[in-house]
Image (cartoon, rainbow, N blue to C red; front, side):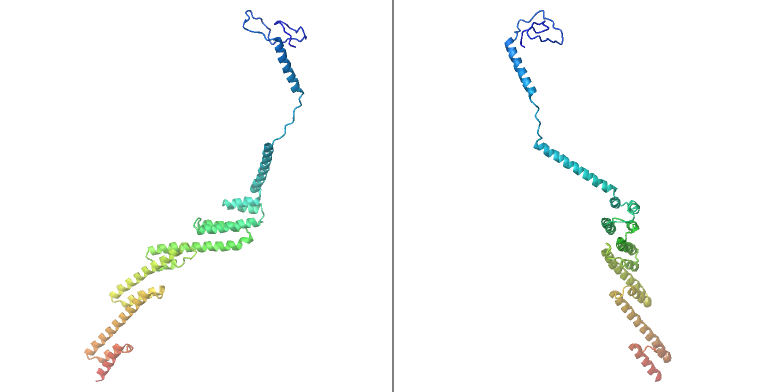
Length: 333
């Protein structure tokens, strides 16, 4: 109430309010003379104003706070995010739990055993258009990877066999075509490797045959064509060289046999044909010379019957025929 109280007062003498202290007050034996007590009037006025403000504040009703625009946007964003998370979770679970998705995932990881188990165990041999499309894609991938030598022959055949084991009728024709393609390409590649080895070993005729088995779909086709030309050149030189050795020894029958053998393998080869003609002409000329020499020997001895006999039946040759007629005339005279 603003009434001045003594330091030891327990109650206000004016309003009767009890004076409460946390600790007993002990008067100072030496009060500070510099301390100036507050004016009772001023203290009363300040306390009254504080009390009035406190009562006014307590009488006011708490106002309801309105949600701001930013908070509304934030709340909407949180709700939208929650919906997306739930949707993603559903999709995620579908991806991992649906049999078709598990099968597709196994195929993507090249886990054919698992794929086959899922297909027959969980799907009961049924396939959707999406699954069939995926299997077709996988078959074509096997073909492409084998063509590019990214996988080996055994792996390609094994993959195709596993896909065939799913017994999807819609894939039969594509599987047959792809498997045949892989087999043909495999044989072509093996033929090329054999041809390269034979060429290095000097087996030119066999190398040419193997090079001829290389298919156009094989990436080795261009190299095989070059290999054929190289093998032909080497084979021709080998044939002509062996024929020349026989000819130098006067063994023209064997010399002729060499280009004849080469022409059986390389029909129409100009160098071989030309050399064959030369050897035949030379051999024929030598045969004529030998017959003329023999007949002349008999004639020089006066044995015209033997000279005539040596040339008899060779009248097709003009030179031999002329000698034959001469010896017949000489014998008659």
